[in-house]
Structures are given as C-alpha cells and as structure tokens.
Image (cartoon, rainbow, N blue to C red; front, side):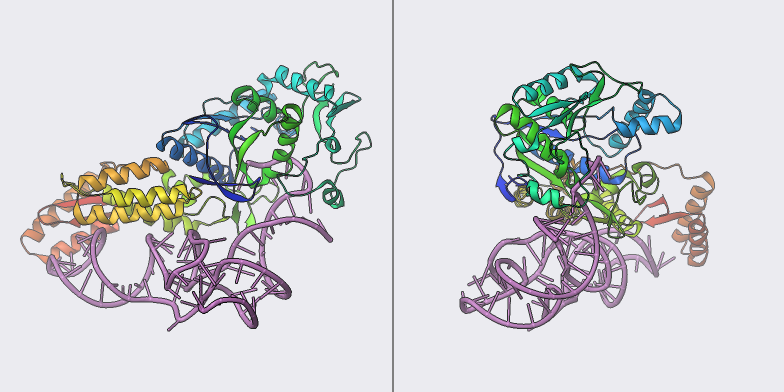
Length: 444
RNA sequence: GGAGACGUAGCCAAGUGGUAAGGCCGCGGUCUGCAAAACCGCUAUUCGGCAGUUCAAAUCUGCCCGUCUCCUCCA
C-alpha cells in the first residue's frame, strides 16, 4: 500500500522493516479532560490503518502513550481541588469509554510517563553525554543547534523559526528554540529525583524514550494529528536520532483537523464538542462513518447537518443487512479488488466507501449471502459495527393498533387502515407493509 | 515576517495528464389500495478566476482571489 509520508512529502510504497510485522507508535492524549471529536478522528484514522494492515496480513504492534503528568494536568487538578492522579484516572477511564464506543481497538501497550521515569532519565543522561543536551539550574534542555537535521519534518530551519514573533524568551537557554527535556520542580506534589535534582520530564522526551523501549530505535509508523508535526514530532526526531543516529520512524503519518465553522476545533477557541456529547445525538458508527467518508489528510468541517446526512447513509447499510438473504453464488472479486485499491492508495476510505455502497446496492438487488459477507468484510476493515436493529419493544397499544390496521387492510377498509396508520405515526412509529406481513418500527 | 494546506453540483466528497466515483437532497418511473422500503433512470459540457505548456488539464506552470493551519499547549 502507499502511505503519505510527512517526512518526504510524497506517497511512498509501504514496506515494513520486518516481514509481515509493523511497529506503530501513535501519540496519545494528555489525560486532563474529556476527548473531543478531533481526538476521535485521529484515533479512528489510526485504528482503521491498523485494521487494514491486519487485513493485509500484517501483525501490528501498536503502542500509544498517555501523558499522565504535565502542567495542564496539575493546573486542572488544582482548579478542581482534587489529587492529580485521581483526575488522571478519571480521564483515562473516560478515554476508554469513548474509544470503545467508536470501536477503536486497543493498543498492544499503553505506556504512561509516570511509569517510565527511569528510562527517561537514562535517555536524557545519554543526550547530555553526547553533547546534545545541557543542564541549567536543574532544567535540562536539548541543544537544537547541535542536531543537524532539526526542522526536517516540519520543513523549516532554525532561522525561520526564530523570525517567528512568538518564540519565547528564556535567558537560561543557549538558543531560543532549545526545548526542555527535564523540568526542575521542587514545589508540586508530583516530582521525581534525578541527577539534576527534583523535577519531571519535558513533554517530548516521553515519546522518544517509550517508543524506543517498546518498538526499538527504528520502527515503521509514527502517527498523530497534524498539529503534532511541530514541535512535538520534530523534537522527538531530534532526541531519538541524536542518540541513535538512525531514523526513528520510516513513515510519519498525520491526520487532518476537525474544524467547526471552518476553524480548527481546539480547546483554546472553546469550539469543541466532546465525543460524549456527540454520541448522544447519533449512533457511534455514524460518527465513525462521518470521518471515514473523507480522506484522512483532508480537513473535515463538523456540523450537525452533515452528521445527520451521514446518518441516513448509514441507515441504508443497516437496512441492507437487515433484509433476508439467500445462498446465492456471486463473483465479488471485482468489488474486493476496488476496495483494496482504494485502501492501498493512502488509506482512501472515501473511495473505499463508494465500493461499500456498491456492495449495498448489489446485496439489495440480489439478496445474495455472497454480497452480505463481502459487505461485512468491508465494514469490519473500516471498524463499522452495524447495530442489528434491536427487536425494539413496541408498546402493546401500538402493536394492537398495527394488528387492527392489518386486519382493516385485509378487509380492504382503506379508510380505517389509513386512520390507524396516522395514529401509529402520531405516536412515533412507522408501519411497513410487505406482501403478506408487516413490520412496526420506531420512527426516525 | 516565515512554512504549508485547501477551494470540484443545492450540501458533503473522490479524482494528480486522456475527457467528472460515491453519499445526502431533488425529480421521473416500477412496485404498493395509499405509503414506506427497495429497484431503475435523470440531475456539474464542467472543476475559485485569468493566462500559459500540451494532440489532450480539475489534474502541470505562473499570477490573482478566497478560506484554513503551523511557527505557543493542542489529535
């Protein structure tokens, strides 16, 4: 398959380092708040990538971190007047509730920063030893000017970055772009002893240390949202490659943003919707389908209206799968070929879903189990679980009305039949007739 | 100031040189007592604008217009 690599700015043919095995590191969340649908998109994308690689016969070793100590966590915990680790535990639980709802498979490992302090310290010590880092009053900084490749991922050089108006001034740093590997902290409740005194890790170092521990010095895919390209991933590359001298990851994959009214969804703008909220309005697979109907690198503008439209499309799939099927042979190979071709092209789920709808059409037209199985196969790769329409409890009075209407219809008393149908609809239910039976469903 | 992305029908969205996928909506038809569902058909001579390259461009080049992102925490 081909994957767009941020590092080279081209679609490259994916080739794993080890045959049939993929090492993939996806940057996780800082657990201080509920996840919004921007997070949802990112993890849906990488879950779908993982599912497709698995479908293609790879074993995917997926590692995703949790940043469970940092300024935002401490600040939020302080505001809420609760211990930081309690906040972390709550948000961690909420994370899994949200992701499970979206059918996002679990990673092989979920390393947490607070459980890898010693590995981080060893990493920082090694960087100091090699001259890539220096200590100032208990802080340790990465020496950006010492690392030649700095800027190769985000395609900018140090001069350009310094020209930016928003580079923070910090007199203790040798270079304004030097970033913290270790932050001195003697005041807060959570700090660890280190060769440089009490403190905690900087943000970027955790991913360098933990990816190295679980996936090795060099692995296949490193992913996250576009906003992580700089500085986070740039800094990870600097740290790891300064230490090892070999490429950290071969494919750097980044998903596009979720926008609201054409603006990036973000906490600072306050324009975010949490996964929790959105899933109150639509079934989880609809949200997932909403994301997958756009190629992962394109921005998506979130709106209730769009989500509703996708909901209608989703119902089409559900309806097709709810209909009875028959053991009928069918040659599905061209559908599968098209589906794979789409997915092979930089995970073009938008195109792949066109094939899904072709399968839906074929299934509706033929009632063949072959198309049904094919459709289920595609949906599984896309992580779309179809909720089998539950035999919803239809209130007794409604079923009674429905039975009456059916009798009236058989008696050709159209007037009574229509009156009863209207009553049923007024109560929020729908009657669907077929040749010799009828169904009562919840109205939309 | 620097770096980059995007602009395709009423809405969403594929398509990177060979003559516009798919979804939603809308319209017509089949079926149905009427509906619903399903099925069939129709719905962009045209891809932000203007030039250029080419036998051929939504796709390449240049300029312009518009929107967004990154350079600070961010999926």
